[in-house]
Length: 526
Image 1 (cartoon, one colour):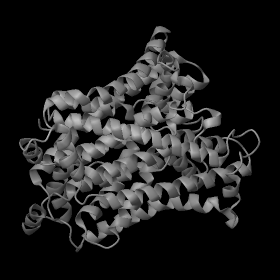
Image 2: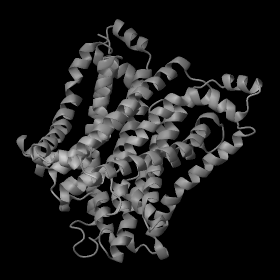
Image 3: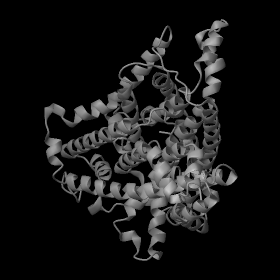
Image 4: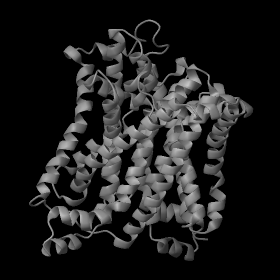
């Protein structure tokens, strides 16, 4: 039996789909049902305030997407088309912002722009997502044959004309896919808006949090969750269509050797790309310098304590240990679920069913973490052991967030493996599990390790669901940072900046590991 046979898919499918049903669909449905049963949803949808929230959410997401595209395309050119020293550093520098904890980025931009407002929110969300554009578009751009561009230039087309008439249409699938993902991330941004927007600027995500946690307005939260879910499904549909076109383009073109030393006007694009990289480093550098303000290490020493009296119930060191434990458990679970889901999608090949399953597995990326977290508290008491008070609650929520990212990294790699290798192994008598062990694992091993490292660092910095679910005595480091910056006191500020810097250093270390594990020419997203 070959790996591609539907039998293997039937054997593995209950694992990720069962987890999705129990720990995502059930809690979300319970929240929506309770809110709808309480009445008042229609009145919430009829208020002008609601549609003002929707307009701001979509507007800031659209603005951030445009900026991320504008900043990411030159970097994509640098990574895909240029043969220059130091590109490994560029890849690391671009990826670090994407995996930084949201509360860290929020604090960095609050340091740079103390007045707050819409602009810091838009720039911070764009800062996060330049990597999505750069790496997704570069993956396709490196496969685009230069000969078509050279032919257009020979026929007299200017460089801008060549780009718009030849290169841009070829990159459209990747740009569309990246834009849909960036828009989704920006529309559901939580930590950044919470830190930078305060009470003045709220999105659907932060308003759901406010109505659920502080106002206990379940009908209002349910109405907003329905609106957010509609936007998420639309973004996922656009992203799935663009991703199919991108994968088709990659299969048709194969791997091309397109990198070379820049010439002429290309140096201008390279200069812009390096400028973008330099700007991406500014918030990181400012935060690191702020943590040693006056060249003092008081903030780092204070991590052994609990800050200003009444701020934390655990020390910064204990919060870091909580983060490590939760992220480890979440990563192990997410890898199990993500790899199983990827194997199912590969085994089922292409078709409407595969597209539906793929979209369903991506839903946790866009649904409010607060909705999921509150859903846990009203449903999981019905499971054996009452998980609401269990230490596994936070890892479960984190695994739900990072499993889609694992799938997006692993799935394209598994799909790129020549099916004839699996068929040959099966012909020689290997069963489906041995085919997986002997064929897929050696070829996809580096990507599997990369996905694990990537998922670990995202779980380490997860803030949305964790801030709602973690008890005061089991707070993780991002949650502790959120509490420190919400309370007055210089000691709290020093501890927050020091903790942010610690998280940044761990993030950089993991990103360096991911880069070392990177497969040249890999087509995985992120």
